[in-house]
Image (cartoon, rainbow, N blue to C red; front, side, top):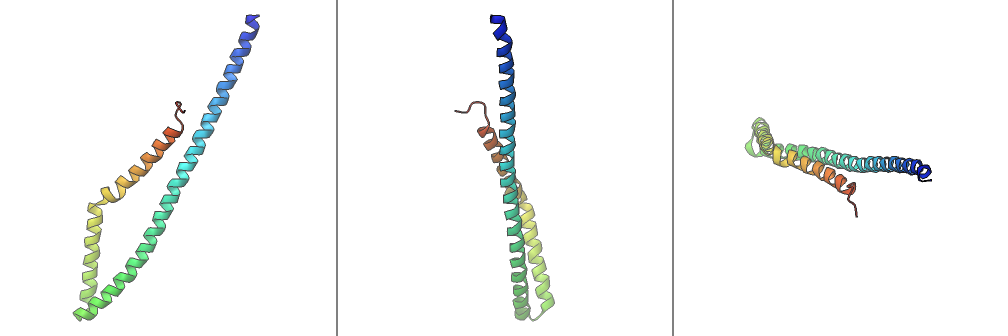
Length: 125
């Protein structure tokens, strides 16, 4: 009689393992979708912010160039000064690229991976 129930238990255990694995895969997939949507939402927000700041910077640069041209009496000199100002800003951003861009991206992605591992650990309470 014990022999009769043994294959049933093994079969039930195998079925339970298959269901558990399918649930874990589904849970991982949903978490991945959640994290990717958060990532792309943040990326889209940053992109929109950069575009709007670029437009604002262009208008302010044109206005400042115009004011400098009037103050200095030479529009060519004002344009050259604004060009130099933008080169200085580009050098500053390049020098701080690790702190401004790379570290922030790594921190955001590692936070997502950590959250995903916390949500899907086998030791959930």
